[in-house]
Length: 187
Image 1 (cartoon, rainbow, N blue to C red):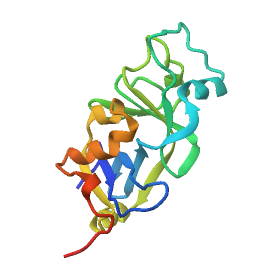
Image 2 (cartoon, one colour; image 1 turned 180 degrees about the vertical axis):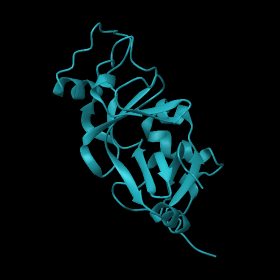
Image 3 (cartoon, one colour; image 1 turned 90 degrees about the horizontal axis):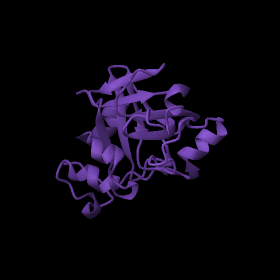
Image 4 (cartoon, rainbow, N blue to C red; image 1 turned 120 degrees about the horizontal axis):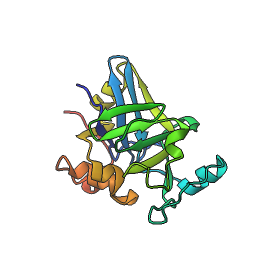
C-alpha cells in the first residue's frame, strides 16, 4: 500500500487538537514512513502576502489578478518554522519534489519569488510545518480507525473552500463523514 498522492481523512473519533477533522495530503510514503501536509488548518492571521513581506520578497512584475491574501496552512506539528509549497507544475525550482504528474512540493525561496507574478504556478498552497509517521506507524493508525484514505483530488487540494475539505475529501470515497459517530468500533 503506497499512499503517496492520497488524502488521509481524520475519522470523527480522532480528537488530537492538530489532527482533529484534518485532511493530510501525503507527499511521500515508503517502507521507512510517511510525510504529509495538512491542507485544511489555516494559521490565524497569516496570509501568503505576510510571508512574502516577512521574507522581504516583492513580486516583480506584480500581476494584480493573482490573489496573495490566501491563508497559510499549518502543515503539521514538525518544523513549524519551515515552509512547504504545494503547487502544480512546473517543478524547475531549486528544491522541488514531484509527487504526482500534477503536484509538486517545493521548499526553496525561488518558488516564493514567483508568487504574485505571471511566473507563479497556476495553483499554490503555502504551509508551515509538516506531519510525519515512522515505519509502520501510519499503517497502524489506519488499522486503528484513526484515518480514512482517498486518492488525492486537485480540486480539493487547491480550490475547495478550506472549511469544506474534510467533508468533500470523505465524499471522494462515498462517505458522509458528518453523519459518522465520533467513536470507532472493531468487529
